[in-house]
Amino acid sequence: MSDSLSADTATSFSLHVGVEHAGQRADRILADAIGTLSRSRVKTLIETGHFTCNGEARRDPAFNLKEGMFLELHLPAPEPARPQAEHIPLTILYEDRDLIVLDKPAGLVVHPAPGNETGTLVNALLGHCGPEFEGIGGEKRPGIVHRLDKDTSGTMVVAKTPLAHQALSDAFARRDIERAYLAFAWGSLPPSGSFDGAIGRDKRDRKRMTVVQRGGKSALTHFTTKALFHNSVSLVECRLATGRTHQIRVHLSQAGHPLIGDPTYLRRIPAAARHLPQDIRTKALDFPRQALHAAVLGFMHPRTKNMLKFETPLPQDLQELAAIISEK
Image 1 (cartoon, rainbow, N blue to C red):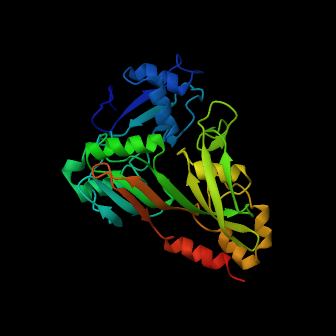
Image 2: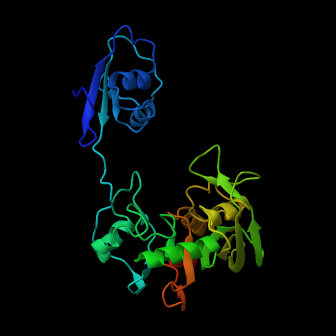
Image 3: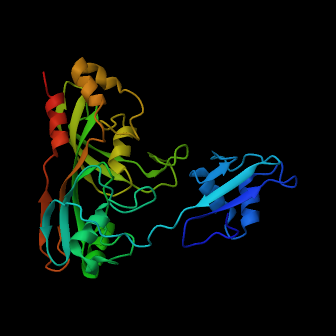
């Protein structure tokens, strides 16, 4: 047992529940007894599995205590403040002293965050670029001027110098960047069109975004339908006029055309799937990630002022998906 929780190492605090504690919330009593942690911090530790009662894990910070219970709260050692360099292979399309353009594979998280502290693109960039890359635009997200979702593949640009970081950040803020994505969406979309709907956090599910009537950020997506398979799946090119979280995924889902494989916005089997032959339908419904690829990225080089444009083909898994859904 430790009477005070260290900020530098993993430690724990234990407490026998006395009669004076009975009937009160676990998080409140623990916070009061420890004295050096806020109640909100204690609540988070309980909810994330760092608490036991009588030796059994509990995740409910509000449960009522009973006399004689033995409580133990574990405080994990803090993660390093700065991401660590790791040697992770990168597919680099272009590199100079100011920037790197790469083809990010699906499954690679862009920057460290709770639950993904290592194995990210930032860790790989630190390993590739060396110590001089640290702190470019911030210690925890060096070089990052835009992001792709973990399971979205495709073209990204990363800044290597303060000049490039500022110029590229400004270009994204001004929307002075060419971006085109390829998406496989359920249903038959028109030949072309636009989705114009402000996006905000879904109040019923904080992990989701949604189109909102007020309080969101304006979002505009232009699309062109490139192919239609079995009148059930559309291959769509989407061009972003804005860059909101999950923008393409939200706009297509809101319009009734969620992406194949989207774990967040595809909650039921879409009606369009019934038009597919059984074997093709099964494979499409089992596709393991959102079928979205950042195919085109164009911008002005921050130093030379030359216009650069990069295009990446569909990765192997999306090529295989296209072959499957195009079968007769």
